[in-house]
Length: 374
Image (cartoon, rainbow, N blue to C red; front, side, top):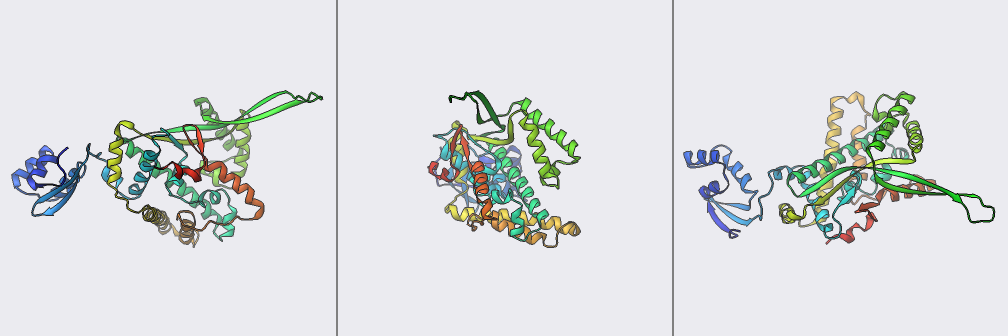
């Protein structure tokens, strides 16, 4: 490794990081032309922490153990500049005890504070739209679109980190199955006993195909034309009931997808070098900025849709989206109350079922995940 805090000239910088064409062009002109300086500085930033100190001289503050990946500029743009370091931090902190982390995209989003404690229970209960005086159609659309955003950004971040050579990840189809066993009871009446157990395992190709066949059959039966109608249309409850019935003929409760990821052990120093480029001095302020940018992103897209076709949306469409982002994105948002006392137990059960996370098959309570941080 070369010495830290060394001073190099502009010419030396071009010689060290420039391509052959860039060197040829530089030496022909004797100085930077057009946007060449920025291009060279971007390339240098993959090898060093570098500072322009003026008079065509540069200070190399630190040299990375291995050059950073070419996708680094992308990992410092938009929402990626928050998601990438938060995911890497969680994976690095857990790598010694747990090699692989398996979450649904929603659980990844909760783990990195992309959405808050209100998101899941509200998403699963349309009655909150009445409580908040929000048009039900807009309420459903909000969660549908945010889900798409969560899945897109988390998956794309994992793809970039994979290209960087620091993370391996896989999409894993999972299935929740019911196992029923019967036998004679031990009492004097010799009655038949029934034991029901549940297991969550990776879905086989046959089970996945069965699910698709069930969906297609129910859609035809209910005359549903598009998949979104299955989950958000007027017939969504009918679809859910019929689909569940068909799955249960094979003792299947439901399917879901997890994203399994882990840091590559041989490149752990590269992981740490990538993390060091973010310079997160205050994690709470960092999360706050992340929440604000994600909220702005959601509202900005809503404004674009409304301005393009205003007659297709409720007059308060933008205000509804702003209200929902404040409630479901901000980490410090007040916990929303239950819709009614009667639904308190159902919502608690729903949340408990969906906040459990699995690491190498070991269940952890989501609220205690911080205990595993170094």
